[in-house]
Image (cartoon, rainbow, N blue to C red; front, top):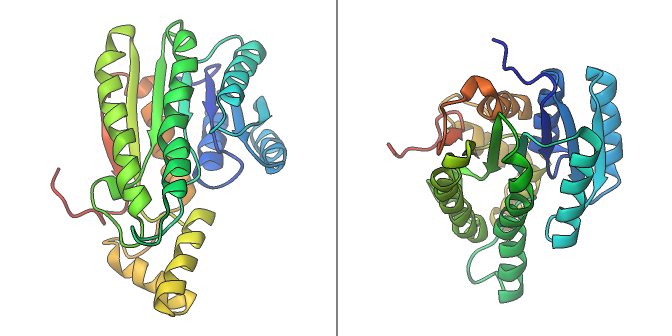
Length: 262
């Protein structure tokens, strides 16, 4: 299937590794021009790897998505480099694991800024440019914790629900501007973030890493965690003109682990 992404401009945040990097790479494979950002110097390495593999144009930007001035800068830099913006993928490192009693108020505020306000600011600054696109799409990356709360993940369970509310609302409000807004709810996908979660579980349970991974795999109907590439395939399709009538969808990419019917 031709996803009709050749020449389209996509900005993917938090793309130095994990789901963001895999998504950016898949956009590049489909012929899109890609801007990627992250806080660390790893973003330049990620851009070089994607360019070498795909031959696509990739713009690497150092930025902290909790800072409004950084968000404005990366949006402007993307538009200046590529002449416009068609697709925005809002991604950010997940909030730390922990229970309600473990988590202080300062961490709540930091996580709120990272998880919700980063998406709000990115969309605010991107919107005027997306309005000019003939194939505009926004994708928020959230989590299956919005459907089925996970143990020891109170911040993700709580704050990511606000991102879902934002996504669904914007799918209605921005639809008249021909901007589609969807979300992907990834389940267990083996990334550096999952390593962090498993490490936090080990601290609570005292189990080995192998035992914790086996426990996760056993809970997934497909018997394993997903790969970043499997996530990216779905993300890029949802953002593409091939999915031009898909709007307001909260799509689980989780191997069937989420048990709810809605």
